[in-house]
Image (cartoon, rainbow, N blue to C red; front, side, top):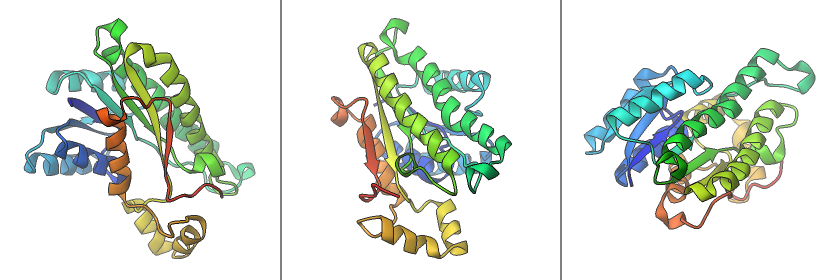
Length: 252
């Protein structure tokens, strides 16, 4: 184990991944775009528990900011050996004919272009042809990639579908370089954002109960544990896989 960079690591699933990874011996770089205080809380939690972590700012859709972020991690922790592309944002809400183009454009920049840029920076450090010793990349997708988000968030679902395809192509491209690439596809998960959503929309839990065979949302720790397996040596023969952590949810 060595250095893990988690984009969007200041809250939700990303924050839990950071905390759990530190307990397993990883040195953790907690990326954030604007939530410096939230990222510092995660870093403090890790440090207070005896781990090692830093907070690193970057908008993942900016190649210059991403390269500066990786350089900062190089200097403070060492070269990244595992990358979890977790940063994401939501877009329009409603049918496609009512699309907010500006929101959707921003969504695609963060959710699709971001993983490409971050993966490129990681590969330049991990790949054998660049003098690296290999590594692991995990892209965080969503069950929305399967059901499409009809009527409410088709753009978000489409962005996560792109992440799925990116994972498969990148895994094949980089296998000979010693880099494994997999995709983690969570379903409805009790992040802070979804907890607030549930207060405002209590019918959401009923909807989850109807869709998910396990009859409950997932907890962030359950998603983080799957991510830990994907970056561990226990999954050393797994690459190009799309792993659902959705309670059995397979349809709209």
